[in-house]
Length: 393
Ligand SMILES: Cc1ncc(COP(=O)(O)O)c(C=O)c1O
Image 1: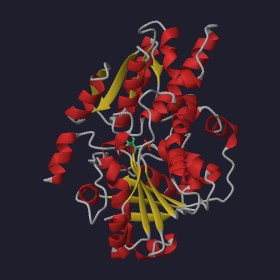
Image 2: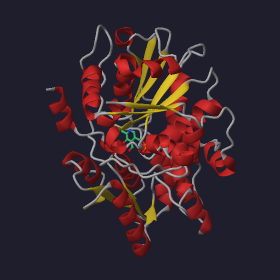
Image 3: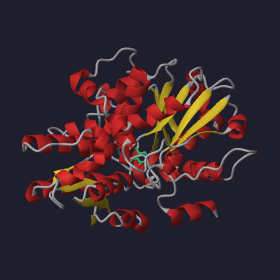
C-alpha cells in the first residue's frame, strides 16, 4: 500500500547557500561528459498508448539504460566528481590537469594505480566509480551490502575493481569504507555525505545535471512538463532534479514527486519527522529496488529536497514488478523499455497515483488528470539480468 505525503516545507524561493550554488553552477559539467568517447545523450522516449491507458495527456521517459554501456545514470556523478577531485589533487602537487573537455587525458598525468578510489554502493554508483577508475588506470575498492546479487558484484569486478561484501546494510558499508580509507590513505568517492565530507557528494549531485540538461535539449521549447517523478536513494539525484527544475529549467516549473521503496523511505520519513530533519528510515532496507535501499538521506542533498519537492511517495516491491512488466510489455506502438527494479519505481509511482482509489486526494493535489504531462526517469536497465528475466516470466 503506497503512502503519499504533500510537502509542507516546499518553498518558492529557498536559499541553498553558496556551497550548493558553487557546485551546481560550474560551467564545465556537460562539457566533461560530452568529451567522453562513448558519450551520447540517452533517449527521451514517449509512450502515448500507456499515457492514454493511465489517463494522462503525455508520458515521457528518459531512458538511462543506455548510459555508457553501464545501464544506469550513476556514472555521470562519478566522472564529474573524480575529475574535480583530480584537478585539486594535481594542483596541490603543482602538476598540470587537462581541461574538462580533455577528461580522457587525465590518465596521462597520473601514474598507473597512483590512487585508490573507494565507495559504498548498492550497485550502480560503485560500478560508475570502478568504471572511471579503470578509464584513468587507477584502483577502486567497492563495499557492498550483504545479500547483493552476484550480477551486481560481477558488473563491478569486470571494471577491474575489488569488491568487499559487508555483513550489513548499505549504511554499514559507508562506515566500513570510511574507516578503511582512513587507515589505507584511499580517496572516498561517496554519493552520500556526512559532517566533514561534503564537497565530493556535491560534485556528484552536480554531475547528474547533464541528465536533466539532455532532457531539456531533447524537448521542443514549447513542450510543457507538469510532473516529474524522481527515485530517491540517498537523494543525490533528487537534489540535482531540484536544482535543474527550480533554477535552470526555462519552461513552467513542474511539480516534483519523490518515490522510494516502502522498506527504505528515508526521504518520506524525514519530511514527516519533527521539523523535517533527516532521519534513519525505520524500514528493513530489503527492497528489490536495490539502488534505493538507503537508510539515511545525504545531508548535502536534504535541504534541496526538503524545500524543493512537492510530495513524497513510497511504493511496494509488487508495484515495482508491475511497472517493470508494463514498461516491457508495451501497449499499442509504444517503444519497449527495459527497466530494472530501481528504474521502474517512477512508473510504479505513476500507476499508483493514477489508479489507486485511496490516492484520489493526491491526484487532485498534484493536478494529475487528463491534461497532465509526466516525465519519468528510467534510471537503470537490467543491471541484474537474471532477476529481470524472472520478473518477466
Ligand atoms: C538505478 C538507481 N536509481 C536511482 C537511484 C537513487 O539515486 P540517489 O541515491 O542519488 O538518490 C540509484 C542509486 O543508487 C540507482 O542506482
